[in-house]
Image 1 (cartoon, helix red, strand yellow):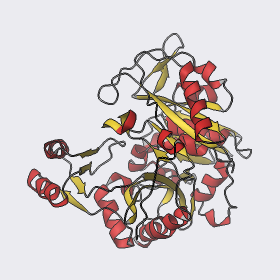
Image 2 (image 1 turned 60 degrees about the vertical axis):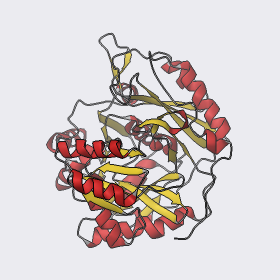
Image 3 (image 1 turned 90 degrees about the vertical axis):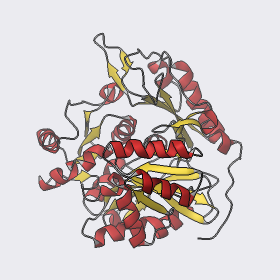
Length: 428
């Protein structure tokens, strides 16, 4: 099979690498890709949010499957256009992608499906926002209702800062969702769905804050690890039964079946599992860690989902190792990332045993050098027999790479490695 991967980031580089490992995949292309992806497969300068352009490229390449990575092309209806053209596409339609594109819509679906989540209110003006903030109290959780690439959420004890974020969203013509704060550790679970059947991948945990100790502003994610040894027995089955399958059924019942990745962002609270948010695609940087461990051929899995045949696949097979991914970000990320700086040491890092370098915001300059082209520049993934070994490898890889002003967290998966994550068991 020939596969076309749509998107420019680290998630897409991880998908490309996994697809190249699939013996059934004969050819992989990417659009638009990045400097790292271009080292691995042919890339094409196509606007990923232009459905007609994506369809034309898929036809030209004779693609047997198109995998759409980021949220924006999904919301733009790229999958709809591919399906209309008779080209198998992995990812939800525009209507189904509303689960991510509108947090208010997601809350409606969760209510219909009986999915446990944070209590929430939608606010369209400052008065409604202030009322909701006072109803839930601190810490305040304010989410931009639209797509925000993981950065539209403010969690703060400062009521004025919460109101200010809401005001920025209103000024941009949007609404906000204000929620109760959920305590407890967070977990990301990717569920592959064909619209009716579903298969879970291994759970992961990511790190949203820019600085060590979960300090500083939210980012798109500074690192992740998988699997999570501290999860209670039966956790994945519980999420499938109480969160994923009811949501997939509710979407099918309303005539907008959800096929693709249902990303379940979860909190393990004192009162049990609660959904923080849904996304309609693979999460970044969790994908880099999760796919590093997947032995089951990825292309065949995604094609089965695109063709409504997930019930026919065998149980997934995983490598026994643990994976830790650490993100290298540009200077001044996330506020005003510096771009255009030359990155060195990439080959030296990649040459290390059980270490892989997955590019996100990279490009080639006129001299052919790899330069930073975004806020999150790359992720270094280490595999080890345990968290300590995987961390050691990831940070050894990072130690080989130089980026002027580059920044990364030194504590990715550290607390878990030290046995510091505990779950207060509660009810449902």
